[in-house]
Image 1: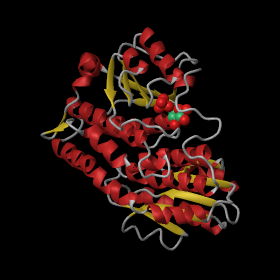
Image 2: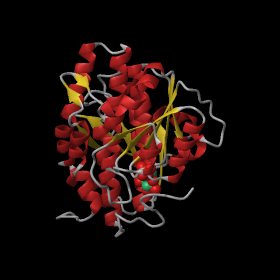
Image 3: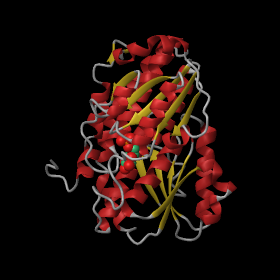
Image 4: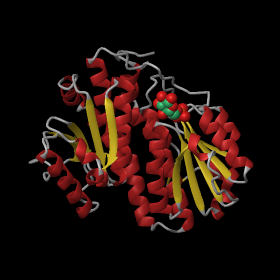
Length: 368
Ligand code: BG6
């Protein structure tokens, strides 16, 4: 039931801190990551030399964050592929390949077929699902469940943050096992993970600022989203949400691509959301994205920056700034996504649209 919420989507966004906390529950113990669900593929994990993540839609964007974590923390070469592309192109699979599927419903036909295909060709399969007893989980060698609770709104929200949390746990576990992470670094990352629910609750308190912003933009015909590094999948997700819910043309780009094409789209009044990297992570990345903001601003874009608290470098150039608490570079995407989800929901609501049941979409696509 919706409780007092205007929509299931609003309710589910409010449940994101719990989705993360519940997905972590019992899995971080004494500075270690405890995932007995991986036991059936333990031998394969010890030997893995490549990971391929398969998923569709929002789940595929969580997969990009999973890739960054798996490569950064565990040093395992990782690719992300849309499930429906994966099995139609003769992918190279060996007994040392781990195919991780991600699916909220666990019933998406394209992802199910990708898992079956991978298994038949000798790869090991791990699924990350939010629905107990789901077909994809049953068809996989091992299954790790996210505990976001049932997601009713068609557009995925709380499942996304839970998926990223689960992927980060897997990456940390592999990093610990492979010795690619110093114990002190593991401790720091686990601390950041455990602190996310509280910080995300703070972000959700800024909902009214985002509602105002959305209401002022209900006549907008096109919105662009830029992000770089871990901000890139967030830009893609921000654009997807806006398409799905508000039926507005939206595109997400890697900020570094700007000068290779998208900047041609910038004309006076073009709305652009920019997910700004943490200045503490990489000074040069932060500077590059701030300079992207200057470039599009100079061409008349209306810029909404999503930036860390205390990042004053964006202030002279952004028309609006949505703040997120400091959380460490890898963890900030989990805080930056909510403002974009809320923006899409509020804009759809301002246009009088049904945010839980957007036209033409289904919660779970069980046909190919
Ligand atoms: C789409 C949903 O049909 O399927 C998206 O509208 C979702 O919200 C995508 O991300 C994948 O679904 P699932 O259940 O496999 O995560």
